[in-house]
Length: 127
View 1 (cartoon, one colour):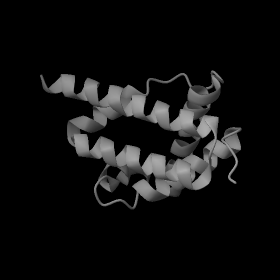
View 2 (view 1 turned 180 degrees about the vertical axis):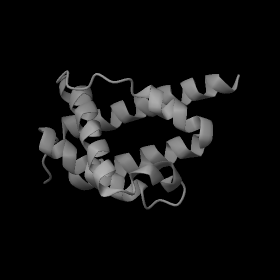
View 3 (view 1 turned 180 degrees about the horizontal axis):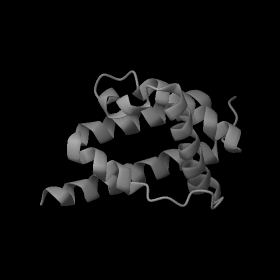
View 4 (view 1 turned 135 degrees about the vertical axis):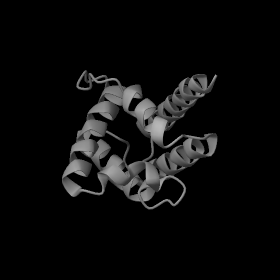
């Protein structure tokens, strides 16, 4: 039996393994080219740990606008629906490989909500 997501260390493991997948996924890896530098990648992973720690455990440690960098990236590398589906599929697969339990389920549910809202906001820009 796998453990549930219980703390920041678990979130770091999840994000680290997830990024290994998406940075090697031919469909979406081009969105992550800026993180080919290990130092920039580590900074980004720590920001994502803060984000997910706040999403899952309401830590209050993330105070940035998560949408803004994605909206800026969309200007040069447009997101399509299949990109969101791919991101979500990789996220869910990573959660399922590493964890099980209530918080793991919550992480996948919140990821779906985040991807859905982000896709809606990006589609609004097209109109």
